[in-house]
Structures are given as structure tokens and as C-alpha cells.
Image 1 (cartoon, rainbow, N blue to C red):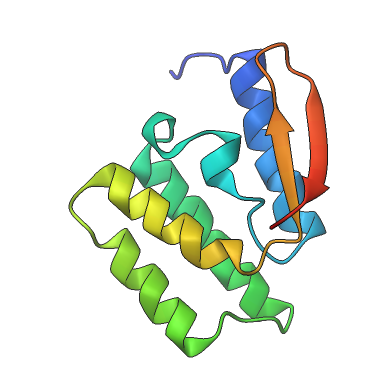
Image 2 (image 1 turned 180 degrees about the vertical axis):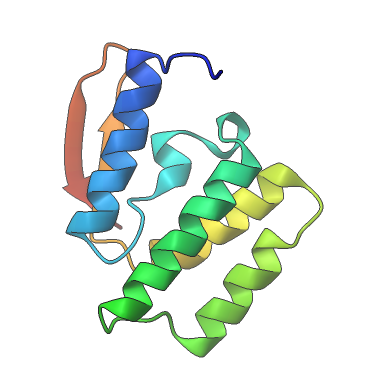
Amino acid sequence: MTEPTSRRSFLRTSAVGVTVLAVPGLARAEFLLGPETVERQPFAAHVRRLVAALGQVGAPLRVDDQRALDSALSLADDAAAIAGATRVLDAYSLLTLEINPEGRVSVVAAK
């Protein structure tokens, strides 16, 4: 049996999920959670689902970006893999969601 999800973890995951549904890309996940606080396996699985969903709605990643994403996710270092994947997906982001320690959410235009 798995542990119950904390409220903060749930909010972070939900914010990323809403971003995936609302915009064609992750909202700068590196700034949302930081690559050192994200576990590689769930992040990579989420990214693969995102890429598949983008393809299904007719907005696939460019071939070069797909190669760069695959290359980043195959790196041995977890933080480098997450940061590399995030850099690729940043080009597709329209918004950045920021959640402060108190749980307040702000949305700004991606850079």
C-alpha cells in the first residue's frame, strides 16, 4: 500500500497536470519544483505521457527536440536528465506556475 500524498505534493503534481492540459508543454518544471527535488522515474513517465498526448492532439515535438529530450532522459545523472528535459520542454511553455512554501500559486508568462 502506498503512503497518502501530502497536500503540497498533491498541489504541485496537480499544478503540473493542469499545465499539461492548459498549455502545450510543462510550465518550467525546473522552477516549479527544482530538478534536485523531482524523482527521475515519475518525471520521465510524465514527460513521455505529455509527448504522447501532444502527438495525439496534433502538436508533436519537433524531431530535433524529440531527439534532445530522449538524449536528456537517457543521461546517467538524475538532476542533469531532469534539467535537460526541462530545457527542451521550456521552448513549448507559455506559462510558469510558481508555488511558494505557503502553497500560494502565481502564474506568469514563460520567458
